[in-house]
Length: 216
Image 1 (spheres, rainbow, N blue to C red):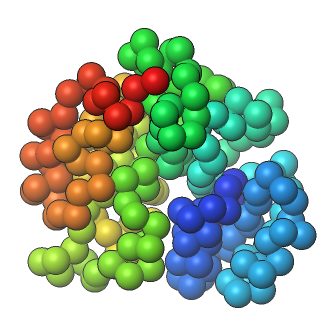
Image 2 (cartoon, one colour):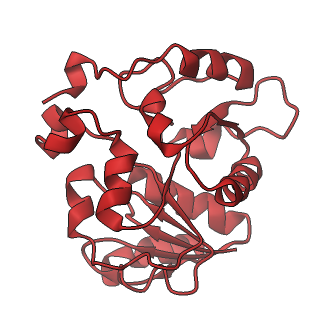
Image 3 (tube, rainbow, N blue to C red):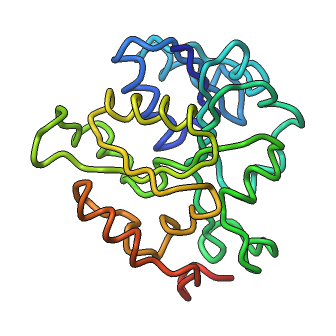
C-alpha cells in the first residue's frame, strides 16, 4: 500500500520503520520540514515530504500528532483519503491544555474527526512505541497481543485489521468511533499487553468518565 504518516515522533517513526520493512511505500512528514527527516528516510527508505504531500495518492494515512496540534493541520488535507487512522491521546495536564469539547464528553477521536473533516479510525494510541518493533508475533501465537480499533467505516476497518496483522498484532474491533472512549488514557485497556479475549473484557469494563489524571 501507499501510506502517508503525518507526525514523526515515537509512534510515527516506528510505524515508518515497520511499514517500510514490510514493503509498503511510505511518505512521512512532520511540522519542521522534510529536511529534518533525512536520517529517518535514509534508515528506512521512506520518502520525507511536507505534510501537504503525505496524503497524495495514499491508500491510508496515519495522523500521529499532539492533540492540540490537530486543528493546525491544513484544511482539506485528508479529503478523499480512503482510510485515516488517528493514534492520538488527549493529555490536558501533561501537554495539550484544556480542550472544552473533550472535557464535555466528546470522545477524543470524534473531536479529531470533526477537526479534520473526514472519518477516522482510532488505533495505536495505547501501545508503547518500542513495542511496535519488539513485540510483533505471528498469527496464532498464544502470546500475540491485540490492539483495539474503533470507527464507522467497515471497509476501512478491514484494511486496518489486515495491516495490524501484517505488523504482528491482532485487532479487536469494538464498534463505532463514538465508542472510542473505551481505549482512551486511564481506561482499563490503555496500555494493556494482552490477547483478544482479555482485551475484549477490558474494553467492556471501560467508563466514559475520564480519570482525574487525564482531565484538565
